[in-house]
Length: 259
Image (cartoon, rainbow, N blue to C red; front, side, top):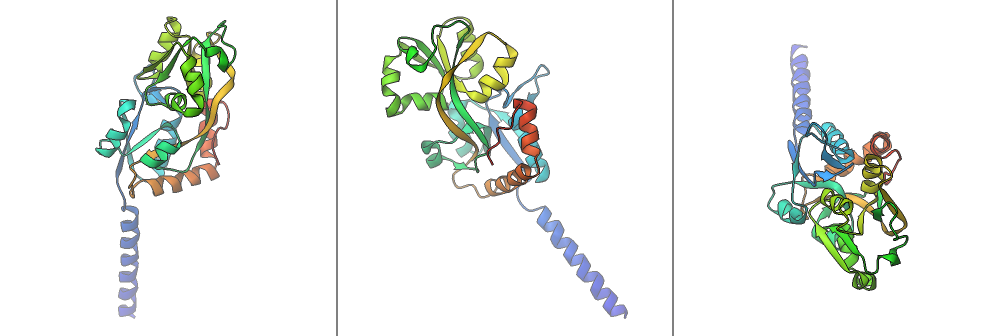
């Protein structure tokens, strides 16, 4: 009887050790790169804290994975180098999926729907995309807006502009709009609708036409095996249990989750 009890106890101990080992497998920390001027996805609040919709999503995902998360502001134009050098492990910052990025990065399943909008000052004579002819247009460097203007299908539009200027972040773009140094800007819908329209109501208008609809994903190194599958799995869980929807409604006032 005693031998059976000892064998049972040893078996239980081995099972506990195996469970503990499974829980401790995988990386303990992830460093997420972002543009900390990109409200409402990731930006600094009045207390200089990095907050936003993507921040809440990432914190909840990492909490469920028992993984520490660090948010690291980066130069958006150098994001690929930041990933390849392993100074960051992921880009979680309304990262639009396009064919070029699919070749360069390992991408999660899409988790947001988005589009590119043209924003102009209130009262502008620009009412449709064709009205951009002869105007100065602002885009963020290495952003989706910049990518779209370089596409062959938009060559006629690009060639018709007086100038198009690249800026390091959207805070600089809106400053240029306010100071009338540019006539229009191509920005993410989440930025235009979710933040600046609330921050400075009535100062800007968004054209009804869009530059294109898109989906958003989380970017990793192309050969990533540590983070991508784990994040995909936990994001699926968060979509199913309504967590993603709740976070979206908190920041956007609507459910823009891609299911």
